[in-house]
Image (cartoon, rainbow, N blue to C red):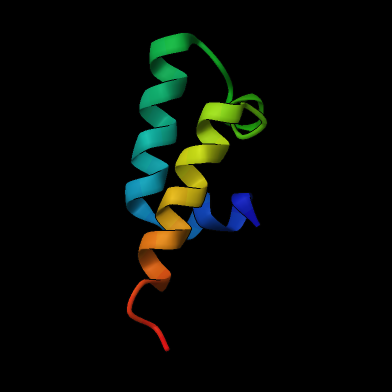
Length: 52
């Protein structure tokens, strides 16, 4: 699911790419990090807000 969000959400992808560039991780490594997972949860919550 987090990989799908990376592929389909440009804002999340930009965050992960910047994180990777800053800290020297690959995307696959970064997607396992707790901080990135928390950002993923934030983006998925923001997208579902207002949906009944």
